[in-house]
Image 1 (cartoon, helix red, strand yellow):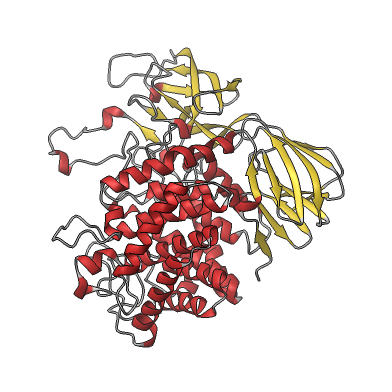
Image 2 (image 1 turned 180 degrees about the vertical axis):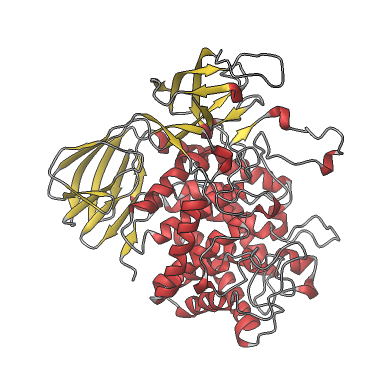
Length: 611
């Protein structure tokens, strides 16, 4: 069943352009910014076991925050970066972990220091979630440095977990309320070749939705919240906490591929369809409900209240990456592209130092605190209007660190005798069997030139972006399952995806966007900010046949600006009036959605009224 192999980020070197800039910003600024805030807030001290003196400010998820940062460092080192200070920090931390690991292999900073008698008693306390992220960090660090001490610590912990959950069954529950360990165990199997880790992942997959020990996580949530209502092979709908859900779907897909389980893979396909067809924002964000950070009903995609957590977008991209290995289907690359240029980029400030937990699709300052007779703690809480350097629950910043460190994973794959190009950037690629230079100014221009140095494949497949209506190829080709297929015998191949501004509309069942359109350019969704457009944004209507002026690439945000004329309703004073059609023409300045909220607070809008 595992037909396709994704190419590792280590084969991909960004030469210049947009993704080189983003990769370097993460390496040079964001990585250190996250570390500094985590030191200030005690996250690293948690795993140094410095909380023994009665301190209670240690949270159940701190281990996972640090683990993702370690994972990011591992990826960067494996990619050839020299990070001696970060290595020193991690090596010292590992020694502290080794000294404090319990004799039976258990390692968790919160439960060892704060609640030693309660380990594996509360399935909502993230123990296996933290273990999963530490496993992923250990694998990345071992692969990058050859230092196996952290990996050995985690192997002992996995043996402990197996005893508690499988052999002796003395844990109070069968599956963790926050999924993550499932996908981590598959990675551990891939890294070590030891099938017991795959079997343990399969145990957790099979137990979810079946176990009589797994109770609801709280009186406020039912079992849909943590995807425990039904056996996973019967899943059809994406429900519950969005991050937990997509992490589970990644684990399901990976286990299905490794064990040749068609029922499990079909369940993944069904939840994929539910997300992409009914529950995904135009930016690639998912999880529209603030309460529970969860999926809501089909087509419920509010803009002002959009939760759209950064980790959820990352999880959906990684789910697509796993599904990309199951079959040749251009849709997986299309969803990854949508996330890469919109919901993922928006998570980080342009200077790389601050982050969004939520990613709203609209800001309307007059709606903030609109319930003037209600005390603040009881008012509707809208998403944050500015990025922060750290959060109380700061899972997103290190997740962003690790995804930008391995962003090259999204670009290429191998399908039999075909080499598949899923994403586009200026890169040098070399895996030993295939070597080429890709030249492009994507996402600001759709021309792609491939200079092929070596290729043992018969065919090259270029994914046709879902936004593209016209393209030109420099050689003979045919279309194949959403790809342009050309012979790999050429020394140079050019493909130009004709890139121009276009409007998109939403399914009318998504009530928030009825009668509205969004402006896009290539893979990028654009928005209006009040700072660039000095009028009420909801008073604007736009003709979709209007001419869009494409500007130069902005030094501020690295993409082109767009300008267009539109219509502004006149200020007529009364609350209601007869329709008179007395609008005036105004000029609008659009900027990429991901660049919003990098200046002073102001209104922002993606979906404009259609004239």
